[in-house]
Length: 205
Image 1 (cartoon, helix red, strand yellow):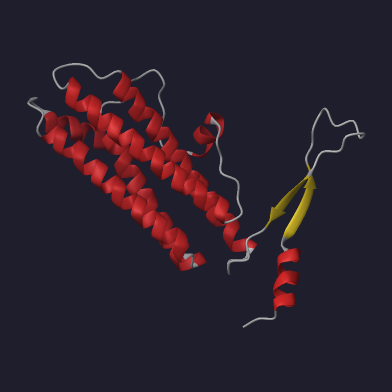
Image 2: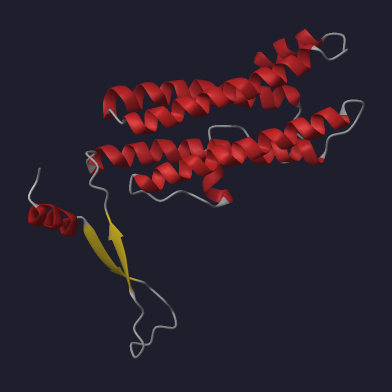
């Protein structure tokens, strides 16, 4: 068991004090200081920083896909309206929960979670076309793309950075995407539309 005073000294060394910049701070009424405590959790900063970058990229993917799924939910129409309306709503809520967990993990590692639309579009590896409403096939393709990205990131975080906490989170996220992709795929397969398999083939090409 470590010495209590040594533990306190380590904690003090992790504390960074920064003044909060404010336009209305005239020097006569100083603002409180912002205290940032860097995590002392067995992962050095040179390990945590690239993991935070990976997490923010994943957060961007989730946020972009959530918005695309919302667009599909808002603009659903046709004979399958009720089923699709419910399906899309269920999935964008799941994506929001995933994004929240990824953002929390980013903060746990001492990083800052990206949060603006500009940052999401800059970090996301998904394609975004604001002129089109995403259909089932394109949402399915996005889920499958995210699954492939996650597999790559899981291997990297596990083998290069040995961060079991982040690996566990990402494996869970991947499983959720696999289930959502399966649901979309099953709906598409049951659509009474001639040439449905050809549509999927064209999208893959």
